[in-house]
Length: 230
Image (cartoon, rainbow, N blue to C red; front, side, top):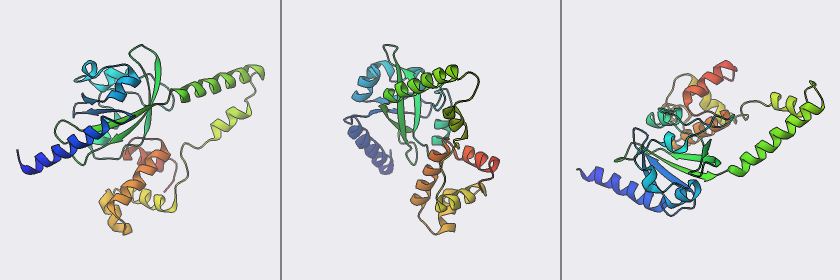
């Protein structure tokens, strides 16, 4: 094993050692989506002990359910495909179940190393956002009651929801980055074209993904072309 590989392993080991003590739940996946790291906060949030999840595919552990605005955990999911392609992954929600079979909404952020280091391909930080699920359920019930009260006439709330754009408006620089992305330019080419750093371009791309509410740059390009945004 070369000194470079040893150094990479050491850096990843140090990162996981720090994340082991964070109050956020943390798990790490290998290239085939198996859990290789599970911290104490993850045990507390989900009820699963580390020895119950290590070596298992993440989609089996979380058993996510289909819900609007939530990512569906499944084999070869868009999040892992984006990570393998070194694309930025925006924060996303997963509606799953705890070990006690209680519904839980997880808000998840992903750290993508510049390359897979040892057995670690991605590191996921998550927090319990079930309070948001309760609020959304309350709003849905309220809208449903209002719809029944007013009959078939659409409520102002429904019309407002239908009129809401699927993305947040982009800044001038984000529009420039998006335009070059649609032209097929990679992040480093965009950085050279605009005269800005590669890190800045990656930050802009992450912001665009978040605003478009998608997980991959391919989805961004598709939506940009469909809605004539460039």
